[in-house]
Image 1 (cartoon, one colour):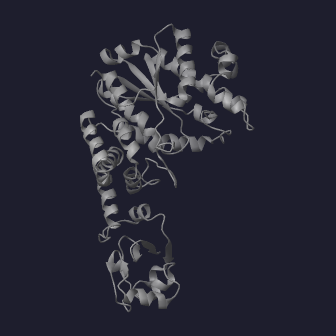
Image 2: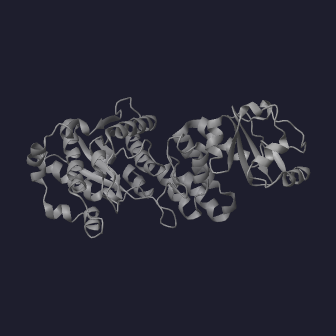
Length: 421
């Protein structure tokens, strides 16, 4: 199986512009690019598919250019959007760009013969005057073709409509390809399936302006069995930034992948061989209760994004919910693990003075001291997963699991974070 055949076998190829691209990717070394608009300070788990695809191409010997959209981010891509985006300030864009750059630099190899290179389209788009852009770029676009794009048609037929600002997005993205082709000999753009129209426009513009080979290839949009975009949870997006989504939350999200989707995720998002993945596919069919494929997916992705330390932290946090003593942690780690459970704040001056029973009565776990006393007597309350029946116990620094927090557990599943500030 050659390289392109493996991409297809993994379900990575959605569309590609020319058959000759197969031979080029298999036998030659080319430069390619993928673009990201800084709409948030962190990439999301859904963005990882394109990044991993870039990593595959780089391992094959092709040179990646990562385009961060300092210019396109100021306009907003209408693709897949039913309403106009809120325009971002320059300060917000700069913060988002810095965050995304740091993440991409951890995943791609920026050294060696085919080192990844990061470029920002504000560096060339920002130099155009309006007249220059309309003369040099705008005259090469045809309104009929621009109106035929799905991203435009869907908005034109909606109540929200589409502004001229977003309508021109495809022109700017198209010129990005032409610029990179001229300056860096980039001949391939990759991106999500929803970008096909924009990418074809860029490819055609590049061929018209420079009479050089240009190709595009899209990857499918990953979804679960219900059609929901991969990387979206009930609580919102799963981010690569650990301060926005903890390694534990990411691990749990992946661990909960449904049986019908997990093999697809292993093929597209990990570097396990197809032979290894076939073994997990058998286990999904014969022993689904073991969730072996989901565990391996969670291990691979969390390690890729957060390193071995992140995986260890995620597994340790998982163990907390199975009764392991909660100790030697940090406030930040506990916040990431228990961010969706009730919490209270108490004065740290109360450490060494506040009784166990009085503390329990202050939490939403109990309606009264009487209820708390009864539950403690039945050995149904734990501090940091350690059962405690001593009602007169005085809470001290020794009871803290982190710098300022302890975790109360009532019964099997009811938690409360107590933070002394």
